[in-house]
Image (cartoon, rainbow, N blue to C red; front, side, top):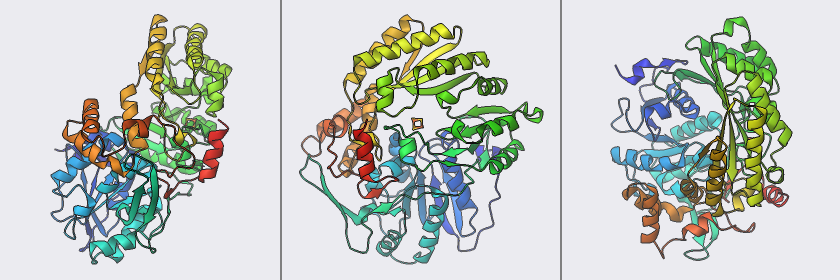
Length: 529
Ligand code: SF4
C-alpha cells in the first residue's frame, strides 16, 4: 500500500481522452508538505478533472507512475528555498535546468504559486512558462492555449503562450543593466508581438477553494481546508499576503457551509484558511453555525485571527474544538511603528485579546512580531518588551510566547524599496535576553536566513549562477557565502540586494510584472509611512 492509497478524494478524476496530454505536476518537497498545500491540491484536481490531461504527481520522496514522454511538467512553488528541489527533480527527470538548453523533445516546464507570482526573476531561467496570479481561470487558459499549438515547435509554442494574459515566458524578455554590479536598466520583450507588461490574474468568483484530498499523511493529519477569505484589507505596508493578492475577497457563506459539510463527510478536522479569516463579514454567523450540537466533535483550526477580532466567544469556540493556543500578529509593541506600518491596532486591543484568550479557556497565546522595520529604533524594541510584561501581568497563567522575525522587503509592497537593517540581529538578541528573564518564551526566526530570503525576494536574473553554485556547495548558509565569494566581480554583492534602500525611480526586477496596485500608489503608501 502506498500513501496514495490512503487518500480520500473530494472530486472524481475523469476518464481520459486517448490523446490526453501526458503531464507531471510536481511539488518540490516531500509528499507530506506538498499535499498540505491547498494550492497544489487544487491545481492537481483541476488537471485530473480534465479529460484532455493525463496527470501524474511527483514529490521529492515519492511519485505516481510517470509518463515516459511528458509534454508538460509543472511545479507548485510556495517556499523560495525549495528551488534546490526543483533543480534536483529536473535532474531526476533528465531535463536540462536552463530553459535555453531544452529542445522540442523536452516538456514545457511551467510553474506557479506565491514565490513565482511575487518575484520569479531569480528562477526565471529554470522555467519555460510562469503562470502569474490566481490559478482558477489561468490554468484552463494555459492548457487550452497549449492544445492549440501542441504540435508546433517549441519557439512557436512559447511565443503563442506569451500572448495569453497572465502567462509570462521569461526567455522572451531581455534584461539589461547599468553596470555589472548596478541597477537594472531595462526589461523589454524581444519582439513587439510580446506584451511589455504581464498582468497578474485575479479570480473574482465568490466560491473560494477547499481541499480536494484528505489524508492522514499530510502535515496536518486528515485536515480538510476551506479558504474563507483571499487577501487582506488591512494593507500593512510590508505585507505580501495583502498587497500581492488584492482585492480582499470573501467566500459566499452558503458555499462555505456547503463546503465544510462536504469535508465533514470524510474527516472531523476543519481548517479555516486565509490571511485574515476573522474579517469575513459573516464570520460570527459561521461561528454560530459551527457551534451547533451536531458539530461538537469537529476539531477546528483557524489560520489567522486579527487581534481585535479575538473575542471571548471565539476563544471559547476554539478551546471547545481542540485548539489550545492562538497566534496573533502584532508586529511591534511600539505604537509609533504600528502606525508607520499601517497596523491599525492599539495597545488596549492587544491586551484585551490576551484577556479574552484566557477567559475563553485557551491555554496559550503566541504573539508574532518583527524587528528591523523601517524607522525602528532601540526605544521601539523596549516597548515590545514592556508590552509582553504587561500581557503577562493581566493574563497570568496563560502560556505566553513571542515569535519574531526580521523585516524582509517583499515585491509589490510599499516596503519593497527598504533594505534589511543589520541592527535587527542585535535587536533579536536583546529581546531574547529581556524576555527570558521574565519567563516569557521567545522564538526568533534566524536572522541569517532572513537575509537569504531578502536576497531571493529582491533578486534578479544575475542570481541564477549563485543559486546553482550554492546548491552544489550543500545549500547551507555557508554555501551562499562561498558562492558569493566565488562569483565576486561577476554579480552584485549581497549588500546591493539585501541591505541597500532602493530608489523609487529604480527599475525593479519585477517592473514588467503588473501587480494589483500601480507603482505610484505603492510609492505614496511608502512615503506616508
Ligand atoms: S493584518 Fe496581517 S495579513 Fe493583513 S495586511 Fe496586516 S500583516 Fe498582512
